[in-house]
Length: 168
Image (cartoon, rainbow, N blue to C red; front, side, top):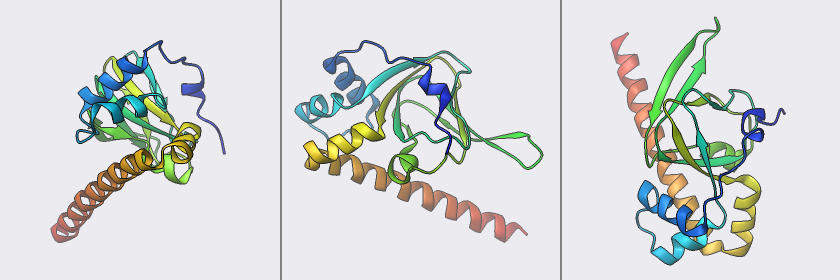
């Protein structure tokens, strides 16, 4: 499996733990967490800034990460059989991407690029494993949020599928 080369070229910024905790808080992705939990969690995240149109994840690459949009927007795109790109979603502040690959480690099913200048908080797979070992209760908060995110996406996809099948 090919590692994601796009992210390997970009270095995280020099955000402090407090800066990252504030960014996680502002994203509202973990809106039920207390400040001390956000500070504890921020230690495990890196923060990146991506100019518009930067490819963050290439479809088919392996990128064990969870990314939370702190500012800006990401575009999720899928390549069709003929090589054309279709837009699947636009993810704004507080939306997450990569959570499936964080859990299963399989190649990305779509590409992700910055739709505008974007700040992304990243929890790498190795750091998530550290979080699981060092702070399991906090890791469970993240896992529950991932489960709720995936459940919501599956419900929306199922609804779209039913609508599509009914239209035929």
